[in-house]
Amino acid sequence: MKALVHSTAGTVADIVADDATFEVHESFLWKDMIADYEATDTPTDYTYDAETDTISRIVYETPSYDVQRQMAYDAIEVQLDALWHDVDDGKFGDDAKTGKWYNALRSTKNAYPKP
Image (cartoon, rainbow, N blue to C red; front, top):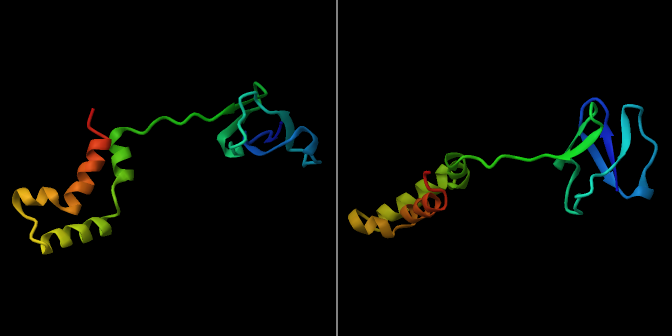
């Protein structure tokens, strides 16, 4: 596999079979793709370092639990709608813990507990 890299920006623009390369602008170069390339990978999964002439996979850090929670919660409109329905159904006191709103938030909190 070959990677089309931008020599100064450090980006990988395309990944093609060895025999599928084509003529490119002088700011781009064809480089051999790294060995652990997988067919499901996209060019944005990689970066190019011109100093070392290497392509490497971008490794993203796992977000902290609070960021994961924020991304997992339903939109506020959905939460408010669930809360309204629970109140309308008379879910108060201990019975509130059987409602849609409470259980949706509880499942997210259980999935991403505080450390």
